[in-house]
Length: 146
Image 1 (cartoon, rainbow, N blue to C red):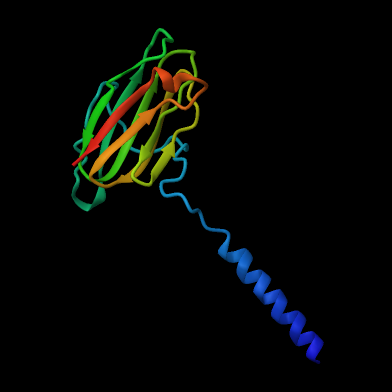
Image 2: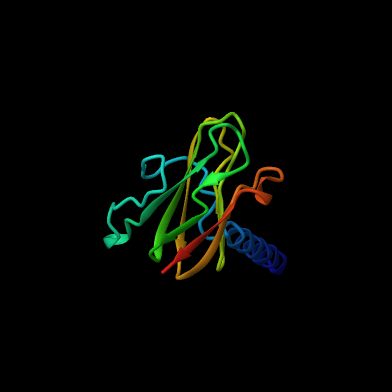
């Protein structure tokens, strides 16, 4: 009887450890599902309202000719939920990643399309960049959150 109790206790402990390891330790996730609010393909702030956590959508457009640049390279937003929308009309693959102050989230790689990443941001400065290949060297910007 003691042996069964011991085996049962070990099994329950292993199950508890496995369940504890199932959580995601990164806030924001990868956000690569491509869903969310839309905005015009220019640097815009979606006035979808900041009340109730609606947040802002900011659009970054990759060079339509396939060059390693985007516009704009500086963005600003209010603290809360921010969505960065990447518009890429070229056949050059790009993604957008936001990083800083404990936040790290990115889109999937986009070719001739659009993608979005959503993150909860506190006041401060964040870097956004293209994580594809060596694109970060040329495709980096700053998001200032107030």
